[in-house]
Image (cartoon, rainbow over all chains, first blue to last red; front, side, top):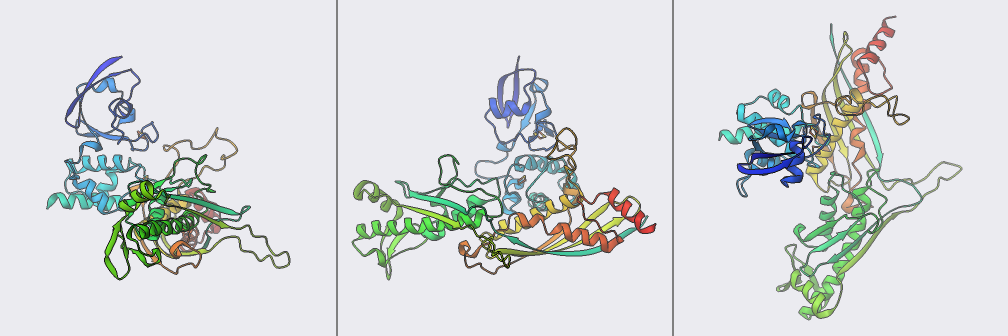
Length: 155
Length: 334
Ligand code: FES
Ligand code: FES
């Protein structure tokens, strides 16, 4: 057991973690942030994606005790009040979601892509979300939404 | 190595619902004190959008805004009966039940409003924004929140409605085999373009063009989403995923997770165009037929036909793996 300090969406948080507590579990069950989803719990579906010090990670494979002192960004921290991020708004406007289970992970992967590459090609978008499984949309609306978000950010 | 191009198409008829010992779904509606309408169902929304579509049906029938509708699919033990969301039956069966319940609730709502306004309920109409008003005299009106308050605290009445849609069991005519197993049938045609690599046997689906006749598209955005998301599943069944030959007999071998169970990712999706044709079904809710499952079906035979067109190999077992293509090519050369 160890006390872990994290900055989550800009706010300092502390919680007690067992060695086997994953970052995903800590976010969902100890910090009450249920945006990141537990799809497979083995790193294969991407629904638990969050940004760890700016890099997208599958939080189900990150032991919380190993990231003490890190900066974590989740889907809950993207909107500024009622104003959604470009990616969120583009997902909404482009209907890039059906059941919505993959959406938080998709959005975080997309945010990470646009942070490091504001002008991605279609193939780069497909590559960036290739670790995120979606069972509903067929991916096309998601790719279009990410390209749309990049466009909005340029305006 | 040569990349062989081929094109194929397939058409499907798809039944809405099924023919068990009768195929019912029930809905109950009641108004809250605030003028919300709770639609109680046992029908489960797995993410396909049933809640949205039946809320549309309730709102349209009640004449109330969508925001006033609360869909409660809480519990299959205690809720009104539903056979389930399968067989592409949800929108059709549940939608019809909700419309029936909403009609009954609307009648009570108009009676309560009529008593408050001291006019005949038959002379009232809804304006779609939350008011009940007198036909031809729109200033004589009352908001649903006041109607609901009056019903609860003044008149002592329950604004509620019951609905059930039952597709009765149907037996075949022994002499002819003729029967009516479903309520209506939706139709679709998909055209697939593929590329077959004659050295590796890999099939790439280049494009899918889909035309769907689904009665009425109650929510066009969701209907198109269902067509294209379903087509993705069709591509997946056709050239990627399989639990065969182990499932369901044994789970000791074969894929058990996303690492082993292959599905096309965002880099492997075909270009798609989709057209929705609306020919309302007389027994559908506002004319809708079921569209759920069929969207994964049409692409598969279309892809099989495109493979045949590309390289002459006729495959009848899914998925169409590189191995089966290469064995087929070998057989043709032999
Ligand atoms: S839950 Fe973490 S990758 Fe699936
Ligand atoms: S929207 Fe359902 S999994 Fe992506």
